[in-house]
Length: 326
Image 1 (spheres, helix red, strand yellow):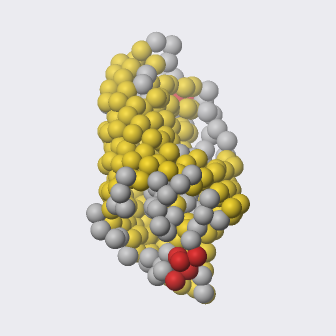
Image 2 (tube, rainbow, N blue to C red):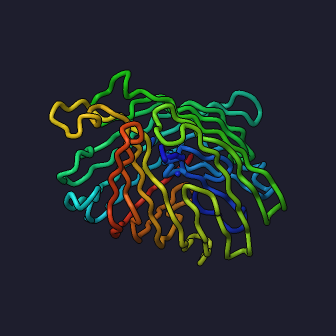
């Protein structure tokens, strides 16, 4: 879920065309996007941010074939806790994704791409990874409406690990979803699902959300992992209040000195829950810049199969994202 992006990770809507952008849903999040966006599931599930349009005008718009996304974020230091503080830890998030669409028939497109995401953490006394990374391919089918996605299914085969790119860290997160029109130009629903074999908590997660266009200036994108309340200040500038969930499922490396021993080469679900204010600005017709800042409510290392959990205190964050489609 962007979570990988992502899983899984859903973005902004522009006036006139009434666009909906999704991020990849999540680790490799999210890339889970459909007819809206994700990533944090980044791409994006993000993750690649996908869109769905409520206007009939979009049926005549060309389908973007090349998709780029880059994101970086910094989360400031806070205590990492597990039965007491294990020291202070910060986080650097880096993501890149490129995708290309190939028309198969009419509105059906094959979506091929490559993605890389990485999380670097400050050193503490806790037996948690000092970094996690995912290198994956993107293979999917997009059903397009003009330049936007109405339905999709996506596979992200790759390695989700610290440094050991082997069979134990191989996974194929799967995301699928579709947009449902309740009231044209006013109310939409999104439904889908995300699955990851490496994920230790819930291997299959249902996806859902609501999109409400209150006016030409205000809309609610109530879709995880990137819900937002958006105000369109100008035709090029959106201001928003929102949340974001990033992270994913990974396999840690073998470490003969780690304690407790059950954390040696085990599975970990990493999650970062954020909330803050942001802006989305159209640099050009095909390129947008997104900046946000706020608080990381909690970073969570969940070793589900080993029965261990490590959590941080809240801390500030800043994030910068650049997206382009041609």
